[in-house]
Amino acid sequence: MGTYGDAYNQAVAAELRAERGRKRVTIEFLVKTTGLSKSAVLNYLNGKRDIPTPAFVEISLALGADPRVIFDRAEVAVEQD
Image (tube, rainbow, N blue to C red; front, side):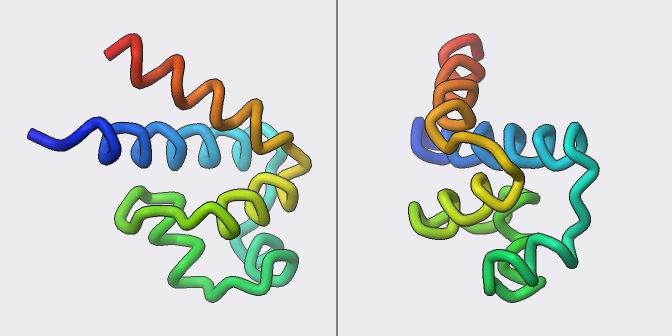
């Protein structure tokens, strides 16, 4: 069983994936815009690696999303589980 932090990281990743889908943003665009490697972006969005705060903010902004909104949605998702 994972920790609360693990659940939160998974929820944040899920919210970023959902936002990416809504905005129809490519992985290549995120790589170019954030300066992160493709493998890092994929690992963060797939929940395979914890998302460092600076990377989370950069990805959120590249998606045209307010990081606070993404974070709040993730918190709601974790609390509902």
